[in-house]
Image (cartoon, rainbow, N blue to C red):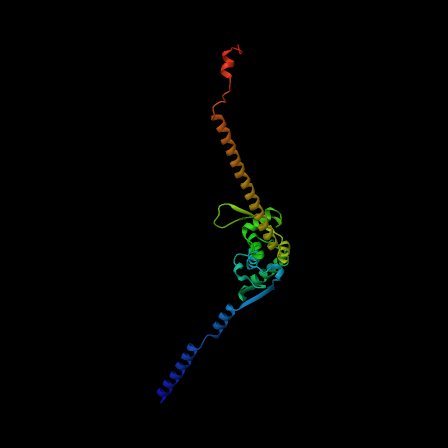
Length: 238
């Protein structure tokens, strides 16, 4: 009888141990969930900052990331109309520091200089037009910037633009007006060039005709004077 009781007790204890071993580790699951949880901060980006350009938005993202520690940069992203910082809760201190840096950077983001590629994207112009209009003063530079490009041995220097100037050109559609002016100027230049070419060809033909007439006179025999032989025979020139 006692042996049966002992066997029953062993079975109960074995079942309890098996139940404990098979039960999920609530503490461990809670730790994993906490580690994976993230904290998010957002900052609005007004249209006057991006000027409707995806390249400009990417440029703002690069500007913000450049001011963050290397390990944190990938967590800051520029999306349409906003900047988002998303990090793990376990990085709370780094999150707070990065948030403060982003807030300071965005205070003057609307005055961030416009890069050449950004200006082309905003105004929908070509690089050739940008160079031409910059050279003749229609596009106004606010200075130059020199950077070392990845994969290049030499640094590159380029002009940058005031975002308010680019916005004014965009709002007044000056790029279209300048493009029409350039087309009219090119047409006038072609017309003047064609006129000069016609005058040059006419001058060449006139010179050629004059040269032919002169050459014909030189090859002709000298004129024969009548009575000259008698005049010479009488010795009047002696």
